[in-house]
Image (tube, rainbow, N blue to C red; front, top):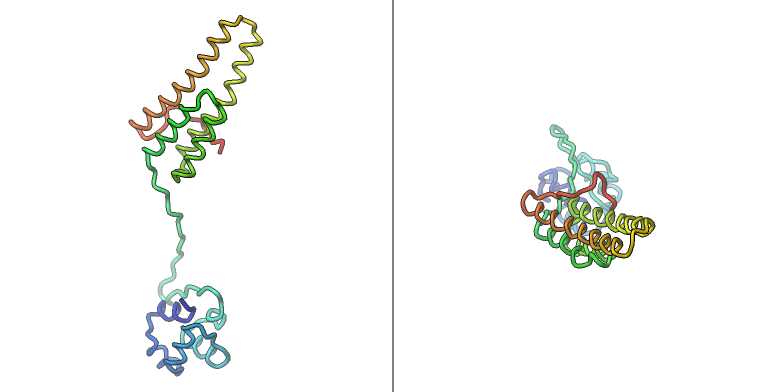
Length: 191
């Protein structure tokens, strides 16, 4: 849309009314609205008739011209992405498949977050919890090894670590179903 046409329509004027007000022919107004840039006398006259600055007709994007009696501030809010709890549950449960392969229990939900377009705080919390578990699991395992309590204890510790992540994932899934929130969550987000 041309700058002149946008401003003219904003002022609720037809081409004929603008022609009458500015004493510029309708044909000239049509040419300017079709893409010809106004110059000299035509530019000054149209700017005076529309009660705007000449530069407003020359800029790439038209300026909003507020009416004399109504001046308001417009703040465009970002369009929120709708939260799909089924997708969030799938993203959460995708970690379950990769409990034994710790880097994938983070990467798969992260990829699903982008492909399913669910970049909200719930999904970020799900991934943050998995990051925290992935960092803590080897630390706990190494502490168990350094305590030198035997091979049986090490095996039991490994099973407990894996089962703890499975429990976290399943408990969060049930809480998403019931209350649309997470049971296990951090007070901060890692992503």
